[in-house]
Image (cartoon, rainbow, N blue to C red; front, side, top):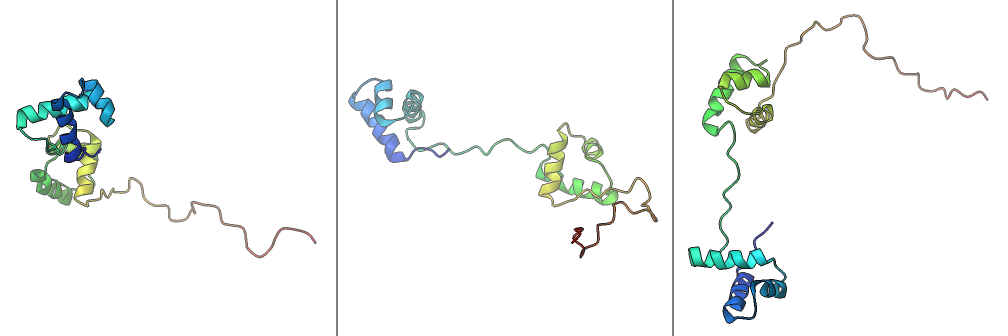
Length: 138
């Protein structure tokens, strides 16, 4: 959600300063919540400005950029590592999805070794019907 424009914030705080009414009244007048008006007043008191605070950026990744080279080396040495084994080798306590996201950031794929030999003589699917005949009798 985008922050309200600075002009609207200024008009809301000015209305409170002029004494147009209580916080709920001013909030209704401008179509915002009562908490919004109270937060703008608190923001002005603490920072001296009504500028929106910067976005802190969210949660830090479980496997940070400083460990990317280690991930690359582990997978270069043993490309068939599972997500769980990779997480254990890195010694991090995170979800398997976090390990998968790290691999996606690095554009690394997990190439698995075959558990069994491929079948050399059996086909895996049924042959398709021949084309050309409609199957109708005329």
